[in-house]
Structures are given as C-alpha cells and as structure tokens.
Amino acid sequence: MSDLWWLSLAEVALRIRNREVSPVEVVQTLLERIARVDKGLNSFLRVLADEALVAARQAEDALSRTEELGLLHGVPIAVKDMIHVRGTRTTCGSKIMADFVAQEDATVVKRLRENGAIILGKTNLHEFAYGVTNINPHYGPARNPWDPDRISGGSSGGSAVAVAAGLCYGALGTDTGGSIRIPAALCGVVGLKPTFGRVSRYGVVPLAWSLDHVGPITRTVEDARLMFQVIAGYDPMDPTTSKEPLPDLRGLLDGEIRGVRVGVIRPMMEDADPQVRSLVQDALKVLTDAGAEVEEVAIPSLQEMRTAAMAIAMPEASAYHLRWLSQRSLDYGEDVRQRLFVGALLPAHAYLTGLRARQWLRKQLQEVFERVQVLVAPTVSAPACPIGAQTVRVGEEERDPRAAYLWFNQVFNMVGLPSISVPCGFVRHLPVGMQIIGRWFAEGEILSVARAFERGAIQIHRRPPVD
Amino acid sequence: MMDQDLAQSLRLEIPEDDREVVATQLSAILQRIAIVEQLVGDEEPAFVPEIEEIFR
Figure 1 (cartoon, each protein chain N blue to C red):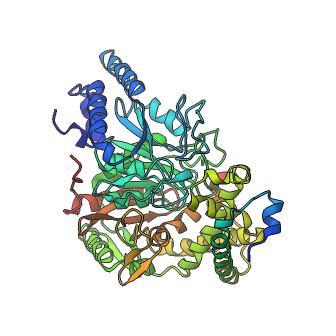
Figure 2 (cartoon, helix red, strand yellow):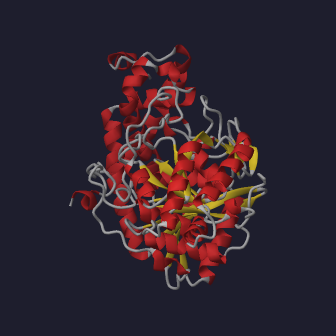
Figure 3 (cartoon, each protein chain N blue to C red):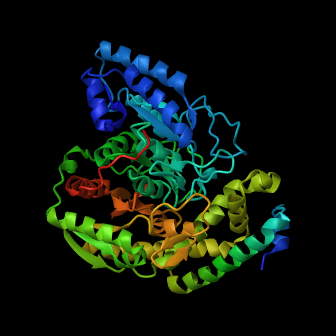
C-alpha cells in the first residue's frame, strides 16, 4: 500500500483491526521510511527496530487469534527520550544520562502497550527538556520537516518532527512551558497538553515537578483524542494524578460547537506577528461559521505571570539537577547549564512569589471562565527561526527565540489548564498553530472546538516536502 | 549581583565564562519578580496547579 505512513492513527488502527493491513507491514514500512528520511531530520535518537518487529509479530498473532484488541492495536508510536521505556536508555538528550537504562516502563508507556501500541523509538529533545529550540549540543538538532535549516521547536521537537514527517502515527511529549504545543505548532501538527493531574508522570524524568505534563502529538485531533483516552487517568504510582472521572470523549468530536462561547485573549493576539495574528483571526471565522460565539477577553498582567512561571520553573529544575550541577556542570550544554545556575541562585522568596502568583492567576482565570468556555490564542508569536539564529522577527521587532515561543504557553502550565495546539495555516512556507485552552479537566471541550476548526479549515491539510 | 558565597555554599563552581551571563540573567529576573510581588498582594501560595482535585 503506497503512502501507508500518511494514514491517520485512527485510520491505520481501523485497517489493522479489519485485517486490511498487518502490523508487521506497518512497522516495516515505517522503519524503511525512517532509514530513508530521518538522516536529514534527526527526529529519532534511537529506533527500536528489533523490539518493534517482535511486538508487531505478536500483534499479528493476536489478530489471528481474534483476541480482544486494544484501541491502538498494532500502531507504532514514538516516545520522547525523557520517558522511560523498559530495557532501553533514557538519555534526556543529555551527556549526563547518556548511559541510563530504564528498569521499567513509565505508566504512559505501559498504558500504550496495554492498548496494543508498538513503541517504535525514542525521540530527540532539547537537553533535559529545558529549552524551546531543540538545538541539542550532544545529539544534534531535530530539524523542521518544512525547512530543515530551521528549528523544530522544543523541547519535544523530535516527537513533533517524527509525526509531521510521517515517521510514526503519534508520539508522546512532555510540556513544562509549551514543550508539546510549541514544536507541534512549528511543525504543523496537533499537540495536546492535558490538565495537570490528568496523565501520570510516573517514569518520566522531571523538569519542574509542579509544571510538568505528558501528552500526545499527532496529525489529527481525533488521533490526539485517541491517545489521550488511552494514557489518561488516575495512577497510584503518581500522587499528583487526579481521581476525576475521565469521560468517554468519542461523541464530542462531531464538530458541533453551536453556542460555544470562545474568548480570544487580546494581549496575546496583539503581541503576535501580524501574519500569525491574521491566520488566527481567519481561524476564528471558521469557528464562528460553525456556530461558536467569539468575544475578546483581556486577562490582566500576563507578562508578569510569565515571569512568575519562570520563578517556579527555574528553582524546581535546579533543585532536581543540583547534584549534577555541582559535580558535572561542564557536561551540560551552555544554555541549560547557565539557566540551571540562575535557578539555583534564586532566593526562596522568588519561588514563593511565583506560587502566590499562581493562585492570583487562577482566580483571574476562574472569573474569565464564568463568561467563556474556551480561550483562544496563537500558540507561537512567529514561525520557526533558522537553526542558530539569535533572534526571531515578530512584526517589526527582533526577539529572543525563547521569549517569542514560550510566553503564550507558560502561563497555562502554571495553573494546569488543558490546552491544544492545532495547525492554523502558513506564514510563507512555515506552519503556525492556534491554541485552544479549556477549563480544568475539560479536555473534551477543547478537543471538540479543535475538531470543529479542523473540519472547517482548508489550508492546514498539507504535507511537508520530505519524500 | 551574583552571590558567590551562596554558589559556594551549594558547592557550585560557576565557570568563569558563565559568570557574567548568569549574573545578568539573575539580576533581570529578580527585578521582574519584584514587580510580580507587588501584584499578588495577600495571595497565599498554590503549591500545585489544581489542589482540590488532586487532594480531595
């Protein structure tokens, strides 16, 4: 079957279930494609070819025995190299953990396997997930499939590239300040950061304990829904997971959003590049045509809340890394090392100010969510910059890439709101994304709005020039 | 701006080439945090994003 790799996750799962294609054929096709395409993209740090083929044969046997099949039976999935896969290395894209071999699966990996998924490999990332460019000094950059001279975004860059380039059907990422949504936006795919506590982080190397989230990166909203449904839920191994019941989200993706109240975050729209803003405005027309009621909302002091998010993230990250920072600081890349030093030197009151701001912002957002059901903003203020660029152009300004890509995202990690980035068009040849943010535990609402946009939009359905 | 004593008490050896960058970043973020501090008034800290749901 030609172009098997471009099928959606839902479609390939259906064809496997209907025995129209075998898991072995699917895995072999992807392994050949990775060998052909990924040299120029560097999305995988390790391809688990032998293990994946063994799992594919087992999946094929299960099909012939007509056993009860999981939702992702026989579907190859990639995993960010921050997440443990039993018996393989979790390097975190670092020299420091280069030889660390995981003794057990992370809960999310376990749940993927229990639902029949095949783990295809470990994907590239910004070192220790502490950056947004995915320029990795130890393993090389993950390259943007729309233009390999440009960044993929990060930190889950390898996962987004692998999905965008048709090297897997879905991937796991982690998101502490935008690390799922930013690379998803810059590579033209869907990235879902669930509510804090919705998805277990057991077996995931932390960046910042109170900000880290795990979620899927996929090519369609329905695929994100499928992966989310599989990995979400209470985990006794992770005390921060919630017992909030997980609804069946299947029926929510019919694109029906008539009467849904959408709040557009004015300060973020105003701060995006005019071409990005224009694409999000076009996307809002699609939502209006589908029956949504769109209004502007002004959440106060968002720039200050971005600072507060950093005041939380930096000391948490440095606390985790302190033992290595004191003994092996030169084994870190320069940017991560310097950031870790700054976090280690921040006084306790700075951290507590961040935590107090979290409560302040939460109250502001609760008020906003009394008026609207979901919020919308650009995911990034500009498309992907060239690898090595010191600045990124946003309108007439040159900005630090970290600021340009992070700030529309970080504040939602701080309060743990669910958020999804969907591709909303192209600036020249480069994709950008629109972010839909929901109330706590309302993943169904943001998936529903995202699906309605996906159905109504025209120019987002393109493939990168990687064949 | 950078507190060398604090760094040493944490047994951190900041490489010479990093010191200026670290000091500049630290100074900048502390100034910005001071503005946040004025904004948050009497709020108490929230240690995780969604406390009630997690610990109920």
